Length: 238
Image (cartoon, rainbow, N blue to C red; front, side, top):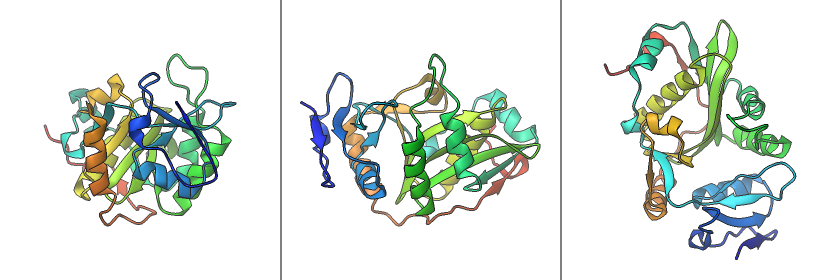
């Protein structure tokens, strides 16, 4: 049975999440910064379509990427080494999340990122928790990814590309940076073939929560993050 959230900042135990649909835990509540941060700390995230109440999820198994296990395809390695681009962090968070909202996934007519989500995550960005990695080509925002950082835990949310490989370029720079700064895990939420090709894999929710609990208590990297990278600055194994 689903739990309906009240104004109290409390979530039910994730073990009560449904098996079908996988991970649906609770309904309602709000998107305040306090509730969102509490949810992420417990391995819970919001995901719902426009017109629906807020739905909260904690799927089992959980798709994750260990930064040290990042895989980069040979074709992308060539692009990373030779293409003219610039990668920045946190220089256009609003542009990234709005581009994600306007870029439907294959087979979908729209995205779940509505005005309430944008406002909530922009507030988290202002508080130093939400971050963007952006790929700039010819002076234009060509692709990017955004997510949440708590302690040494990163929660990936969404990405977009207006130019070929632009989101992949931003993602690889981000993962390399997270690895270098001691982040132990990236939450990818649900399994996709795209993330699998980067080295993502599913783990049991109990294992995910065990690692998460340790990482969120470690000292974090206060935002905004400052990073400028290009092909010549990124070390990519052969």
